[in-house]
Image (cartoon, rainbow, N blue to C red; front, side):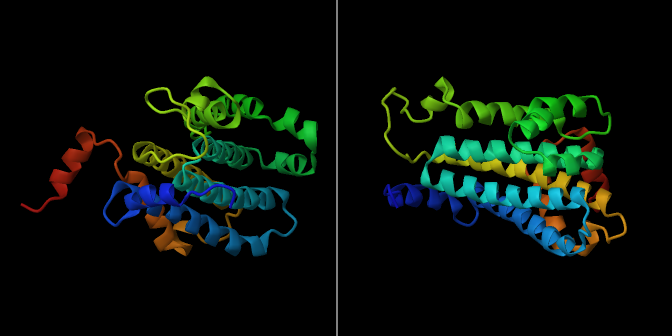
Length: 249
């Protein structure tokens, strides 16, 4: 393409070898993508003119594309564009949760254009509604992700520009290899995509209660995503107590 990324890809690709954290994060993201794809293809045959289902399935497809784009961009060392894709996942995540709680607004979102959609469904407005809805999930996490990735990826900022400098303050022109940053981005991408995928599952099930549970219909794919959510999660005293209780004497 325009720039030669081969050397950068080689450095980062070494972190995707079997048994490494990079490989684990990559597999976790792939698990989310596969589950969303299977659900969207299966339920897409049963939209029956319902705007809320069509919109949520389309948002799921967009999250898949954004996840894939972010993964490719960090592999090639394009840090700020990768952050912008992560921001996109956060915004889709919020809308999926919003339409779970307010499916009647889906048609308005689908039919709105330009500034009308922006004013009616901009991130801050939707967040305010979710903050005042006790049953809303992930509101705080999504806000943190959206704000951070907007700053470093979607808008020019000091923090975003610093991604293109070395530790000595030397400017880099073009993409750069950075193994530590690669792992941090991969971990964040996995963590946010996992939460977004589980909210997607919740919303699809809520809107289509007559269909089989996704955990049953796609048992393996759902178990993979749920398992990765537990991966590297904090361990508390109850976890230890339960583990001891379940361990044979």
